[in-house]
Length: 251
Image (cartoon, rainbow, N blue to C red; front, side):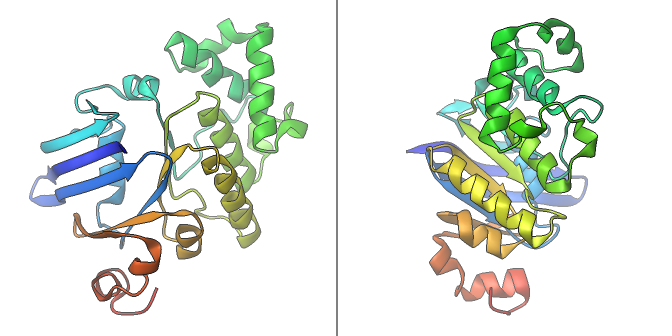
C-alpha cells in the first residue's frame, strides 16, 4: 500500500523546469531513497511534500489525502516530519528542552520556541522527551547545550525531535552530509533501528553506501524527471542510471 503517491508533478522557476512530470510511489513501512546528480530536483521535490513549495500541476497524496495547499505545520500535524540537511535545533537550549518543545507542540499544534513557556514543569512531557533522547542514545547528555554537540549527535537530536512527534512518514534530506565515516555508520545503524519498527522513510542522499545500506526502493531523478524507480540491486547495473548519475561510471 502506498503511503505517499506523487503523480504528474511539475514545477517551474521562471524558464527553468525543476520538476518534469514526476511520478513516485512510496510503500508503507519501507525506506525509499531518491538519488540523482546536483540540480536534479531532489530538494525541490521534497519541498513539495512538506508545503514549502506548491507544484504547478500534479498531485501529492499522503494516506490518500492531498498535501497540496496545506501549510507546513498542517502537514506536520498530519504525520509527516522532515530532517533537514543542516540540523535545525535550538542551539541555546539543552537537549532535553529541544525535545520537550516538539513533544508539547504535537499535542497543541504550535511548534515554536514560545512553546517553552508552556512546557516548563510538565512532568509527562519531560518524561516523554527523556525517552526520546534515550531512543537515539543521547539521554546521558540531556542537560548539555545543543550547541556543544558533534555533527553526528546534532543529527541524532534532530531525529529525536522528529520521532517524539510520532510521525507516519519521515523525510530525510542528506542525513549524513558532512559526517565522518564513523558518524555516518552510526547514523545508518540508528536509521535501520527506526525503520525496523515500520516507520516509512524517504531519504535523499549522495552517499551510495548509505543508500544501499537502507533503501528497499530507489527513484533516480535526472533533469527533474524520474528516469528509473527500482530495487537497489537493479539500480546498480542500470546503464541509464550510470549515464545520468555518474557519466557512465559504475555505482
